[in-house]
Image (cartoon, rainbow, N blue to C red; front, side):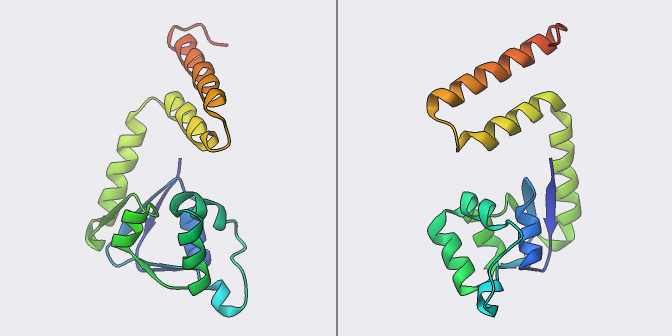
Amino acid sequence: MSIAAVQGHAIGAGFQLALGCDLRVVADDVQFAMRETSLGLVPDLTGTHPLVGLVGYARALEICATGRFVGAEEAVSSGLANLAVPAAELDGAVRDLAAALLAAPRDAVVETKALLRGAVDRTYDEQRAAERAAQSRRLRDLAGLGD
């Protein structure tokens, strides 16, 4: 599990690096931008995939094609960021989130992450089967039966 702590400008590669993380906590002064298109280039560090997944095709296209800046409030409301805090509180907010994530049983978090990541590519029935299989593994592990 990865958490991006983002403060100030995250433009192009910096924005794509943040998009590569599972979660994003931003300072209230954050400014995300995908400026490559404005320079005659295209985003090429695979940031477009999570961007579309987070904000949808139309908004992702608009952000990339215009190269405009996305501030903290919009980042949270559009799903680009999980939380926005004052810059002075960024490190503490990330520590708190990391502690909450680490408090949950690791294997359950790993299974849940895999279920969520694959959900978009599965049918409803396939997702139900994946959840059932993951739950069976968890129950066996919790009962000490292993694989």
